[in-house]
Length: 280
Ligand code: CNA
Image (tube, rainbow, N blue to C red; front, side, top):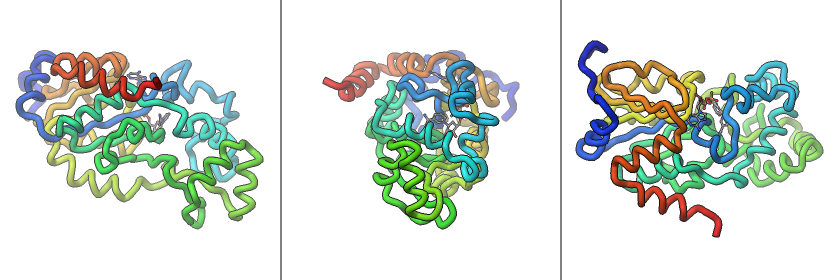
């Protein structure tokens, strides 16, 4: 296959026809952009992203907040951020519910997420269908010995602030952190195992709300076959989404998935999933 080949899809309607007739195994790759409308800032959006807030967290460089070497020297910025974004205080977005709808339609092979906010779980997506590539707050460990620590205790200590996490460090003799993958740490075994099985089966890749800057996650987009259509829904163009089989929706992801659901005739189902979650 070459990039000079005629475009596989001239417009979104043609992609919709493909989804309605031929697709069985959709992989959705997601990033921080899909949780922005829930109130969780992403990394790289200028002005609002965490990387624009270095002063607030007193960081020497943006990536330090998720760097294992920096955390060992100065854990305060991470604990401060963790307190703000701990799961339990945020609701899933329409984009999370769109992914759940794909599952309900029997079309979701897997959701590979870089997000650590567990909003996929909150949206009711089957855990087996989620690969939390960068971990999350569900479990926690000591950073050297890798001993598992009760996640509830870790949450309580972090929510208490500096006194809480310092007491926890004293109690266990070393720092504890939720099992979030920091820069400099390996990704979970599950990521590598499922990646080998899933991407060969994929007949539509949907990439949503990620700058595709973090490896090895970003390279997953190249694992689908040369013929497999790829849809990008993002506020900006990212990755190598210019090949003949690609289609891009450069816009807010909640708007993008609503439009797609509408074209697929799924609007009512998507709306009812969103409404179920709304507080009464
Ligand atoms: P990023 O590098 O900040 O990129 C986000 C991308 O999403 C950018 O291309 C934005 O333009 C785009 N974007 C932002 N808002 C929207 C929107 N409403 N609709 C459509 N597109 C939007 O974040 P990545 O996920 O690419 O980077 C990977 C890091 C971010 C992972 O290691 C995560 O752990 C980490 N992170 C996660 C969270 C979370 O769990 N919610 C929050 C912040 C950072």
